[in-house]
Amino acid sequence: MTINEISANRCFGGVQGVYSHESRATGTQMTFAVFAPEQTMDGPVPVLWYLSGLTCTHENAMVKAGAQGLAAKHGIMLVFPDTSPRGEGVPDDPDGAYDFGLGAGFYVNATQQPWAKHYRMYDYIVSELPDILAEYFAADMDRQAITGHSMGGHGALTIALKTPGQFKSVSAFSPIVSPMNCPWGHKALGGYLGEDRNAWAEHDACALVGQAAERLPLLVDQGDADGFLAEQLKPELLQQACERAGHPLILRMQEGYDHSYFFISTFICDHMDWHAKALKQ
Amino acid sequence: MTINEISANRCFGGVQGVYSHESRATGTQMTFAVFAPEQTMDGPVPVLWYLSGLTCTHENAMVKAGAQGLAAKHGIMLVFPDTSPRGEGVPDDPDGAYDFGLGAGFYVNATQQPWAKHYRMYDYIVSELPDILAEYFAADMDRQAITGHSMGGHGALTIALKTPGQFKSVSAFSPIVSPMNCPWGHKALGGYLGEDRNAWAEHDACALVGQAAERLPLLVDQGDADGFLAEQLKPELLQQACERAGHPLILRMQEGYDHSYFFISTFICDHMDWHAKALKQ
Image (tube, each protein chain N blue to C red):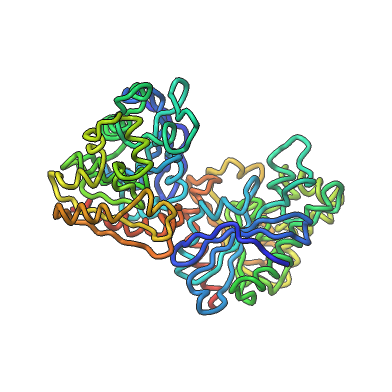
């Protein structure tokens, strides 16, 4: 396996790079971004994954979240994967909708046709991209943390809950906490996984929290002026599930904030501090 | 005169807004962005202008520079104007080039046809938009500072040098320091102002610094891996001009940094501190 460097920009003393590679998981060319802080000159550093939301690529958070300065301060590598396979032969939503298909992989392995061939973002994030980081970057894979926004918050929560021991900490910005209970989730999980709701439960943070093998505390920030709050995000479902399961949750409702990167950039500092503390233990 | 709010997002305790209005200077609809920090709830706050570079709109720095958090900390309003008139009837470069016409107003009042009717960015920035800030925002117009990037660095330096007493401080990221001595400048000033090089000298920081009525110190950051450094930017010309004129200049060559917003976001903190110190005196 080889990776290609698409770009590399000096940033906060480190390097913000964009890379592509032929993915065995998705059967497509995939693009991802890595911020390698200056501390990588002295050896491997801990890794924070940032999973993005609907319509995003590797680029949105890399450009808009404002995380690199904090990662440089803490000596943490940032990884920004894409949100779906792309390219010739990759099917998209038949109506071109933003919430399914391209830009909307939902971090699952599709089992339904025509999606099953390429839409394998769970394997890509959990297995393939970690191998690449371990091989090509000064990444300490024994110290990983994960965060994400919206669909990517769903990805961060579910992946952390499904892989006990893999992550030292997890957080999310305005996550889809229960795809089993919102229109985005019904469309995505129904499309990728079919009608069996047991399969959906494997990718629903509220369902997973009840059977989690470790009690990794969840940090969630949610703007109360987020237009998707009531219909799609429903943080109260996560709160109820965590209460039932005795799972530690810090849910912070942020007054007046919406779903945008202006919200994320405002609170990314708290999340970086949260992850840095866990990664340095 | 009225202004229309296009968007408003809570950000670092303040509001990042985007606005449009019918401009008397350009005869077009103009769009600009303002970050109003929380401190505006208690009264007018000082203002930092950020002038953007070629191809940019009001949006680039608003989204990518990472300045809002620092503006919130210092209690400074940020203003991000557009870089040219736009819309129906506004002529563009005949070849659609990125370095003239739309997105490339160069902060001058054009005197040549067909540009003279709309391309009046100097008046827009120096006169019209300040009036709007004074009328519609909690802006303390007695405490203004100015910065910018590339063509916008040229704009910041020349406008500050041409309006003694207007700004408390000025800085620039990778500015075009002498449009009289680079291809971008020859094309832009030749096109907008005609062949009279005396008219060009009125918009050339190196020429203006020799006759400046006040000795406002210039802070300039320039990446030494900037692909435009040798042919277009030439910071050594500003260094020589400042030495000749006895004008204070802090020119920092930043090793390994390029022309991108990854460079700007790395050093915006130093610029915000620089302006905050001057604005609080």
